[in-house]
Image (cartoon, rainbow, N blue to C red):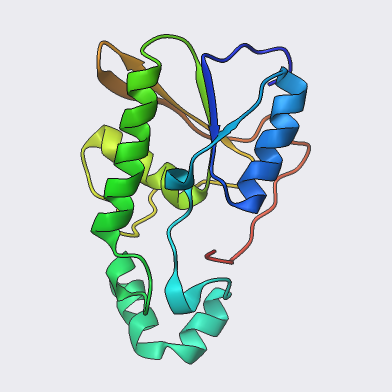
Amino acid sequence: MAGRRFAGFYTSDLKRAAETAQLIGEAAGAEPTPMPELREIYLGEWEGLRTADIAERYPQAWAGWQEEPDWDLVPGGERAALFEARVAAALESIYKRHDQGDVLVVTHGGVIQVALHSVVGRASRGLFPFKIQNASISVIERNHGRAVVSGVNDIAHLESGSETDVLA
């Protein structure tokens, strides 16, 4: 991203995304605008747990998730419709502010999943058909209000990728 010019630069205000955005901003000579609406979904009682811990502590909810992922199964978590509406509103706000030029958004895997799902006209509800690794780049192009996914999970800029089984 070094040397790239952006019409807009936004980040989730959660620490992990904000720190990444700050580093990118230093290289690109830009200051990110924090947007709480770009936060990852709140996973309630599952927040910060590994999948094995969730399966052990919440066997019924985890079995339901395994059968058909749905944010609404997460005990005490943010509801799917609210999460998707929040992300959609954030993206619409960004689109309205920047009808031309490149806009950089630093956010989280669930938010990216919702954004990609919105392009193809489907609700996510927790279904993750797109692989989204940390620090990967996904691209949505908009032209005259029409959106097209032109890249997903590009990690070519990283020396090595790493995966984790932490949901949040």
